[in-house]
Amino acid sequence: MTTDSSSNDALQERARGYGAVEGSARGPRNIGRRLELIDKLAPLAGDRLLDIGCGNGAYTVEMASRFERVDAIDIEPERLDQFRAAAPPDNVVIDQLSADDLPFDDGTFDRITAIEVMEHVIDVPAVLTEVCRVLKPGGYFALTTPNRLWPFEQHGYRLAGKRRPGWSLPGLTWVPPLHRKLSNADAFTQGRLENLLSDAGLTPHGADTMFPPLDRFENGHPLHRFTDRLEETPLGAMAQTLVLVARRP
Image (cartoon, rainbow, N blue to C red):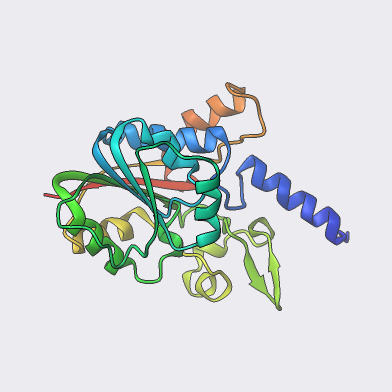
């Protein structure tokens, strides 16, 4: 069976809306579930927050009321322009900065977040070293990122000069050399992330996983309850998203 380009685009858009196989961290349940899982591991509250890779501010705005000041940074000016145009809260300071060279003093922040960011970072150890440096002793760093055990590349991949949806090549993430060749985004196992965090001087504090948020269904849909329960079973290890929190000693 063949699919014309308009039909294929519609299928990809639908997949993004369900949050099942195509990387998109948008949607109220998508945002809410990630923050809920982080909050259970370490409360998202304090004096100062650094939100790395804030994008258009969808997550930053949800966290802002819990902090006295929030520094929201990203390297993409277009997304920061969208954030500014949306009139962020008064306690949010927006800057175009790279996370591997932060202009903040040591021990500045109570909390640091990087939500769906690390998979796009070129030098992960350098970023984590900076995170450890600017985090207060006893402070927490929280991140979410694609789980390598989930069978679909969430950002799509390129083959024969064309970008293709992740659902069209299941198992790609399970073959790291091929995944690195075809995809421009990384994927992590919990063990690899914990080793990287430890090497940077951070102590892994807790971890969880999240299945697709299924934002196209109304809140409280039976499928939401099903996937939430599934996260608590051994199959949760293969869920779409990893949620990790680390602490600076």
